[in-house]
Amino acid sequence: MISKFVKHIFYLSFIPALFCLSLTAHAQKVIPLYSGPAPGSESWTHKEKEYFSRIWNTQVVTNVSQPTLTAWLPDPAIATGTSVIICPGGGFHAHSINSEGNDVAKWLNGIGVAAFVLKYRLVPTGEDGVMEMMTRMSNPNGMNESIAKVVPLAIADGMAAVRYVRQNAKEFGLAPDRIGIMGFSAGGTVTASVALNYNAESRPDFVAPVYAFMGAVKETPLPKDAPPLFVVAATNDQLGLAPDSIRLYNQWLLAKKSAEIHMYSKGGHGFGMRQQNLPSDRWIELFGEWLKVQGLLSRK
Image 1: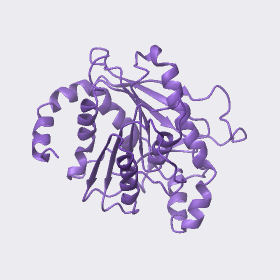
Image 2 (image 1 turned 180 degrees about the vertical axis):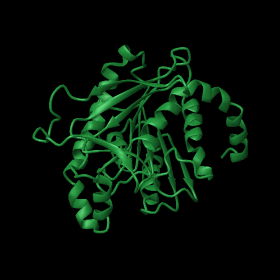
Image 3 (image 1 turned 90 degrees about the vertical axis):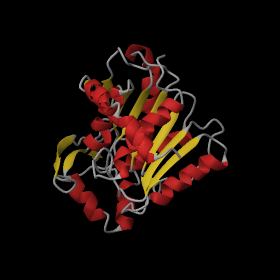
Image 4 (image 1 turned 60 degrees about the vertical axis):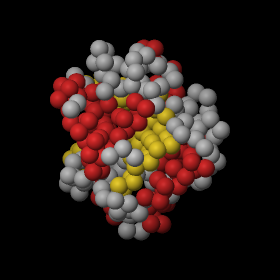
């Protein structure tokens, strides 16, 4: 493993340029994932809500019944043709829309990568979905019961997102064979499940589950053409999810498929793009390095 100090110095030399480039990032448009009501939840009528959660100290989105993709496109002068679908986390009750969504998209735009932030379907909630989730987490059986019906729908949204980006790659100036998917926590569930259950149209070209939660899905054999895997988590994850990331990495390793893992001693759960003055703050830079090694940052 390359010295963290060397990595830090390397990226410091590029911070001014990346900062300037990130200023050009902007949300292009919001795209409905389905032409009509989302399959499997046609009767849902609850309205999407966005608000600042004092519990999580960040902006969140709840009550997603009509999934969407928000396109963030880089400056054409540096665009690589590579794209990443981003699945925010939030226990299938909310989306941590900034630190696990929009902020990631802006960073990726700075290195020439297009991003699509996916709002996948969530458990219907009341006034404060985050509070409801935190209450349910005190009873694991109740929590599992509350998300059981929505998890397959969220995974279907992940599959549909890959299909949409591939089918419309030319419109966005993207390479149809450079479409990845990344997800955090519950979004990591979606990401890993897409990587294990795709068909030809929905196959991602690379995947990056970040502190993924895998307890809500059945173990699935790895496809023979499994895409390259990039895994990030922290050993001191408060939800005890570090073993999930290790199991994913081992699954790829045993199948002799391309895989890279970064397991930090500290960082906790849900660090995303938050700055904690810890080595885990720089995980996104390691992801950028990995994309470069995979040949995904060259112009195409």
